[in-house]
Amino acid sequence: MKRYWIGFLLGVVVFSGCAGARYGLWLFTEPDTKKVKAEFGGLKDHSVAVVIYADERVQLDYPNVRLTLGAQITNQLRKNIKKIRVLN
Picture 1 (cartoon, rainbow, N blue to C red):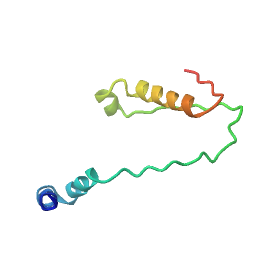
Picture 2 (cartoon, rainbow, N blue to C red):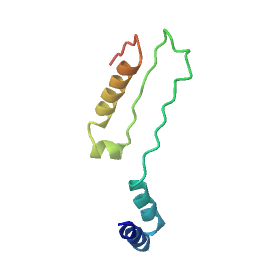
Picture 3 (cartoon, rainbow, N blue to C red):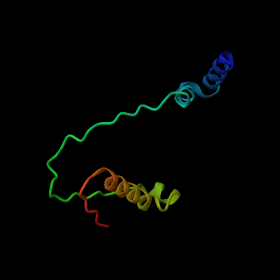
């Protein structure tokens, strides 16, 4: 089985170059995730605006991208921050 994957990756390198090989290797690696505690505590009793910008090409391909991202960010804020008030 190991020889099969080595042959596959060599084929990818031959036909698509190093970028294709890097993508092939990326498929089989674990994602690097790391939880980091918030460092700035100076937002107590303050307002923060979250502005979502999406390029025009992205909006053409995904017309609801800003609404979807806004909903996901709102859900994460409500889930992870105590005593938060979210305004649309």
